[in-house]
Image (cartoon, rainbow, N blue to C red; front, top):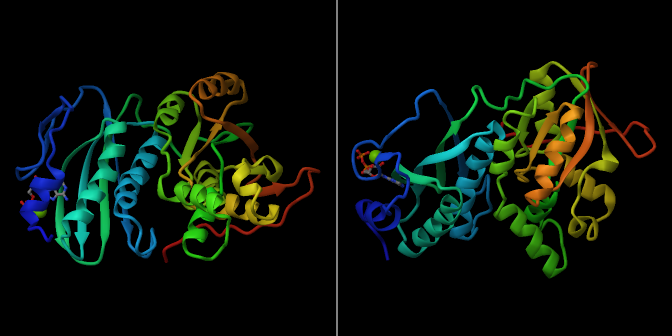
Amino acid sequence: MALSEFEIIERIFRRGGNRSDVVLGIGDDAAVVRVRPEQCLAIATDTIVEGVHFPIGTDAADIGYRALAVNLSDLAAMGAEPTWANLALTLPAADQKWLQSFANGFFELADRHQVQLIGGDTTRGPLSISVTLHGWLEHAPGLRRNGARVGDEIIVSGTLGDAAAGLACIMNKEKFAATVAATLAMRFLRPNPRVELGRFLLSRAHSAIDVSDGFLADLSHILRQSGVGATVRTADIPISSVLSGSVPSAQALNHALNGGDDYELCFTLQPARWAEVDAWAKEHGITLTKVGCIEAHPGLRLIDADGKPVDHHISGYRHF
Ligand code: ADP
Ligand code: MG
């Protein structure tokens, strides 16, 4: 059934919110929120476009989930506590079933992180979803990309490469056994933004970034902005047993180094902090892996298990 713009907002997106700091939510000309004195807000916007960020035909619930997940990941990388979201939705058609499913995916993740949808915009056009997410920063200016220091350990959460393999599988570019395909596809469609980890790292890590474009490309942003270099040990790059068990090791490593969409955190830490951070992560069911170290000499060097240099090129995702 087709809905009017007004019905879309009223039936699908206007739900009772549960945040006490929302003074006015959806329904007026603008949302109004109560701010905490002495705290700063982190604000991120990310847009996902059909055929660019997700394949045509992706399930609506997965699109709704993903639209928020990519923004949660940006706030995680700043160490912020997410609060309010705005949703700008451009739709080719106002199909009620599709919209309901989209909203289910969106609100599932929003509820998990106590995020309230407080406003947005709804227009007709090629499918594109833009979310602006706000979040509290307990310490300004948050976890920056420019704080890496010589001697820091380089650490990544979770495993890398599954999402890229999952996308290749969805796009029929790589073939996997059915159970493996489903697991990898879920890693692409339903990333798990590391919000709690980011908040824990806020007063501890020297720098952080979320892995959205590819590990090497994203780490390079930290290096450039911090004015440092790094050596990364390829043998230590965390790769899931699902991925390493189903493709040749060189292909798995390429997905892990250059594939995007993992939404894990990459951060740098003074070595003395490692024990505390790793203990916290273990307690919270998150695997952390030390993959290299920050050095004064600029550039990114890869070495294998024997310490020999590994040739590489950085081919992270670029729009233009
Ligand atoms: P205006 O014409 O003043 O822009 P709209 O009709 O676009 O007003 O929006 C009315 C209300 O619905 C506003 O509170 C707006 O924030 C909210 N809204 C519109 N689209 C969405 C959406 N996709 N998700 C959440 N809130 C929305
Ligand atoms: Mg409007």
